[in-house]
Every structure is written in structure tokens, then in C-alpha cells.
Amino acid sequence: AACLQRLTHSAVKRYPRLDPRLIKWHLIDIAPKLMPELGDKLGRSAMEVLQRRGIEVSLGVSIEKAGPEEVTFTDGRVIPTRTLIWTAGVVASPLIATLGAETVRGRLAVNAEMSLPGHDGVFALGDAAAVPDVAKGLGNVCPPTAQHAMRQGRKVADNVIATLRGQSMEPYIHKDLGLVVDLGGKDAVSKPLGIELHGLPAQAVARGYHWSALRTNVAKTRVLTNWVLNAVAGDDFVRTGFQARKPAKLKDFEYTDAYMTPEQVREYVEGSGRGVS
Image (cartoon, rainbow, N blue to C red; front, side):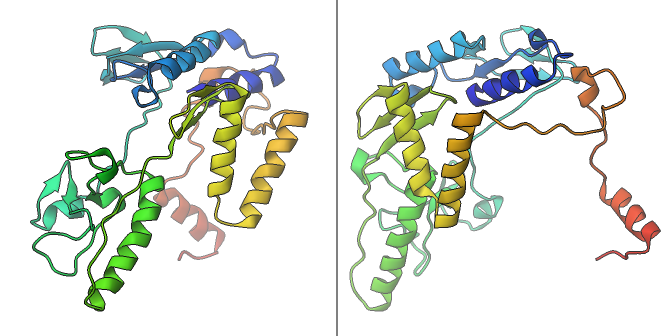
């Protein structure tokens, strides 16, 4: 929400016929606090950034009904809007439920070695597995994040080899490195190794962590170059041409049928004599 708000309000400056007041952002979250995993202090810092940018925030509510021109909150409020962006956490594949094994919220209940009890030679990790978070104590499971999945993959590989060699397996233990949240521009909140940061120091940690996680030098060079160019010259925006001969209004950019259905693609390709594969 923070980055999209910044993007749209920077982009609209390029189009003087559009009124910036037409763009309003409203963030809702079923959680009682904003980013509770970061703690109260950093949660308040993030809230201050959003409010300073004019983003309305509603906590403890969800969407009861969504229509083409409005959404209804679970607390009864009705907000007129033509744009609804919904984000949600990941879930395990529905295939997991067909295996007949014990699950925890749709994820396979594995042990600390990430093997499936009662099924020799079966291992699970990442989104598909509820891996016990040994570092946090009994009853906790690892969140389905890349930070855990990448390390779980290496540990599962070691355990598979140990099984083939008749050796004992090792449990997956990883102390959380913390969370980083890029709010766009110079704003960020981060909690690396339990240290609470906000503003530029937090942004440096957030960008540094994401940059280091990129897998190839080509990707790292591209991203770093883009960051430098954007910092010096500002963000780049591309305008599509289908509104060139009409007065630009926000609602005209919706329901444009800019994408073709598979049937329309087939008709187009067959009509051009290019064939379909």
C-alpha cells in the first residue's frame, strides 16, 4: 500500500489533466495492529508514514462484500471504489489434503527433521509443511517464507543423504534473522536481529537484504543500477496509447478489454494465417 501510493502520486504529476485528489488509498487489515510481528514501536512508525501520505487505515475489519463500484466492510461501512487490491498469505497445495496424512492448517505435520511420520522416505518443507520452529519453542511452526524454505531445502538434502547412508538425521533449527519492510522512498521499518530501525537506516538494511538475496550477479547489477538511476533521475513511467485521443479520466482506464480471451487469441492468429500452437 505504501509503495503503490507513492508510485501513483508520483505518476499523476506527469499528467496535469488528472486530478491527484481522485486517487485515494484505504488500507484495511483484519489484524488489530499494523504489522504486529514488528512490535508496537515499529508498527506505530509505519502507521505514521502511511497517515502522513494520506492513506486511510482501518484495522480489525475485513471485506464482507465487493461490487463493481463499492466495497462493504464487516463493520457496515460502504466505501465507493472501482479498484480493489486483495493480498493474502500463501497456502499449501490442495494436493496435500489428498495424501491422508496429518495436517496443520493444510500443511503436512512433519517432525523437526522434516520427515513425515509413518511414511518412510517422505520429506516436506516450505509452503507444504508445518515444520516445528525449534528455535522458538514447543508449539511454534516456521512461517512459509523464503528465509526458511531455502534453508529447509539444504537441510532436507542433508537428511536424505544421511538416510541413504544409514546415519542419523539432524533437526532444522534457524533463528529468525528479523523482518524488513520497504515503505518506498526513504521510509522503511526493519528489525534485524531484534534491533528496531526506521527511516534511512531501516531502508539501507531492507534494500541490502533484498539485494543480497538475489541469486545472480546480473540481477544484482540490474537492480542496483535501477536504484541509482531512480534516486538520481526519479521513477520512470510508461504511458499506454489507447487514451491518446480522449480526455483522460481514471475510470476510462478500467474495463478496457485490453486483454484477449483464449478464444479471441485463436481467432486473431487463425485470421492472420500464423497458426496456433
